[in-house]
Image (cartoon, rainbow, N blue to C red; front, top):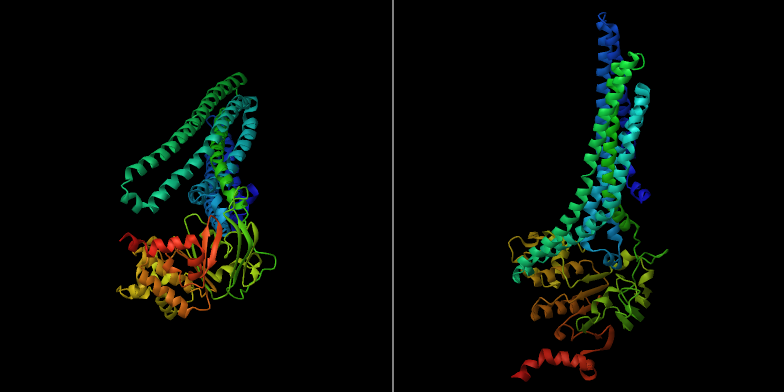
Length: 583
């Protein structure tokens, strides 16, 4: 895990190394200052009335110089630490986001959206803070502890053994805190995911929440998730609260025992074994030692918190994409022909039943294929295999006569344009949204694609035209307008295969017919797959597939299916003649 995270330091190595080096200089100077101060005090004590001020000034000037150098080292160390940690966090977020972008749908199914957002934000921030403490405070504290202990033994001799009394107490306390806190931190992060999920669902579904007057229910749902996080954090904070009193107890013990023993040694030896200056420096070193231990405990707490965050981050980084390019991928798609050969598929290898079973199809290039079926009949699953959003469990899917697993995925997906059932528009102008399909599309190409998708009329009716701003998620356009814009965006890719996954459900029948007419007359070379609920949307297709329970129950033209398939006949009758029969 540490090796994986260290790989995100990259260009920040220089600042990462300079931070502890300057911290070493600061610690060395801080530990030398009490010794020089002790010599100055001893000199004043020994001089009696014959005090040479030049010596005092020399000592004072040297102490001021050391203090300024120590301050400079501390400032530079902090500056480099801030730069290194911010750069490290940037690289970590970049690697996480890039990893998520490489995931297949199967990988994304493993992690919830809310969990990925938490890992990219809260978890990265925790690891960033821990990284900054490790390269700065975690270097300073051990160095200060070691130097101060050495100097205190040198200045105080056996009296420094007082520290051996408090270190076991602190060690036991920290071990107890860690043992109890770590499981709670794991639980907290999981509950954070649920909390973020509640927020995300509520914000995305705000219109549904308000239309069903479920605000109170959503408030209660959020309050419950928030209360769970609060309870666990309260338990953790109560444990961590033990740390500070424990450290203060150790400090007070040392502050009592060191002056007590030192005073006895000074009085009994008449200043020959130990002097007042040595006592003053020993007290300073005692404070440095105890403050170092306190900072180590803070680091310990931070690492305890960030340890679980780091594990969650590395879990994403270590997850291998289930779909990868072959060693020598095919980069050109010859045509839009599609073949399913003995295809079976299930989302989970351990699932008992297949989502698709025994599918055999041949769709020639340029054909128009309609796909009908009830909810859960695996219509969307079928078309997801064409652009290799999932890999088949058995058999193979071919596009242009080549198994989709042999293609370079980017090359394949550039030739398969999919308009999803859930249309997504991004904040920006209509033109910017359309150019997602083709960043280099000219204005003329935008207009042509929008005319084919029957979107140009409502776009030009607005004063701003193609420069009209679209709110996030397309909130300021209707469902039908959003669908037509998404169809136009897909057409700009100039694909060999166009898939409409129930993408005209929100448009009226006349507009639907005009879109199909434009496809038939202006895009004869593109293979078109249209998933629809209305028979009218597919009845003029070259081939119609009837899906039922993960299988192709029937295939043929409109007339053939009316004669041979009961499911299709029932759907057609209910949609076209049901009203007449009732009358």
